[in-house]
Length: 467
Image (cartoon, rainbow, N blue to C red; front, side, top):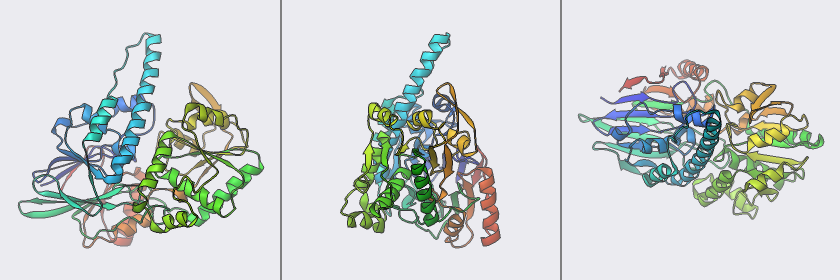
C-alpha cells in the first residue's frame, strides 16, 4: 500500500512538503517548501527535515514559489542527490527564486552573527550555501505539460496546467501495486479561473486520492471588475491627497498581473500621471521570463498586449521604471508624491518593501495595497489585521497609511472555484485538504459535503494516510 505523510502545509498555508512512499516508486517528495513568517535565519534553522534526505529518491515539484520549493537547497545540503521533476518554465523561475532567497538568507545570517559577536554569543553556521542552490538546480529535470513520464519502477507522472503562476502544475501520479493501479492527483496551488495572463486550471476526471489546496476555502473573491473599480478609486483618492501607493507583491505571479492591469488603465487613458516603480530585481527578471514563455500564457491576454503594439509586459506600461540597484531603490524615497511602488516581499517578511514602509507607512496621505494572501505570523498579516504600530529594523513605527486588500487579484482559486474543480472528478475519490488555515479548510470541507456529498480529510502535521 502507498503511504502519504504530511510534513508541511497541513492546516497551515506555507511549507508544502508531502512524502509519498510505495514499492512502485520508492520515497518521493511532493514539494519541499519553506515555512514563511518570522525571522528568516530562525525560520531556516527551525525548518528541519523530518526524514532522511539521503533516502529520498526524487522530488516532484508543483511550482517555484518558495513555500513549495524553498527547502530544496537544505535537502541537497543534507544529502539528497536524486532528480527534481518540474515543468520547463519552473526550472527558469526556480533559479531566480532560490538564488534570491539564498542571498537574503546569507545576508541576514551575516547580520545576525555580527550581533552575536558583539554580544559574545556563539555564531551560527549557515544551514545551506549558494553551492547547494547550484546543486539543486542541476538536479532539475524539466517536463512539458501533458507528457507522461516514468517515476520509479511502477509509476508515471503527468503535469497539467494549474493556472497559478508561470509553470505551475497539477500533479497526476499513477502507480501500480500488485497489478492494482491507483492515481493520486495533487492540485499544487490552483489559480482562479478569471486570472489575467494565466490559463484556467486544467480539470481532471479520474483519481483514487485527491490532495487539494484550500487557501481560500472559506471565502469567494470579489469579481475582477469590482476589484479594478476599487483600484481606480484608491489610486484617484491617493493622487488627490498627494500621496504615494505601496504594493507589496510576490515577484512571480502577482507582480506581472498588477503590471498588466496598470497597463490596461494606461492604455485606456484612466491612469493619472503616476510614476510606477518596480523595485525588485527578482520581479524584474521574472517579468522578463514571463515574456520568454508567452506561448504558455492566456492567449487572449497575450493578444491584447500585442494588439497594443507591445511585445512584452514591461513595454505595455510605458510609465514603468525598474529599480535594480540599491541606489535606484533608495532614490525612490526622495519622491514626495505620485509614486506607485511595487516591491517584494509579498508578505512583507523581508525585501525592499519594508524600507518603503519606513519612509511612508506613518503618513496618512499614503496608501498600502495588499494583492495577495498574507499568512499568519507575517508582517503583512499583522497590518491586514489592523495593527496601529509595527516594529522594523529595531524601531517602532505608527501605521497611518490607508490599508486595503484587493482580493480579486489573488493567485488562488476561491471556495466556489475549488468546489467546481473537485466536482469534475468521477465517482467518489478520497479527498485530503491541505495548504489552508484550519478555519478555511473546515469551511471548504463543510461546503463540499453540503453541495457535492464529498467527505474530506484534513490531515495534521506529521499525520499519514494509506491508500
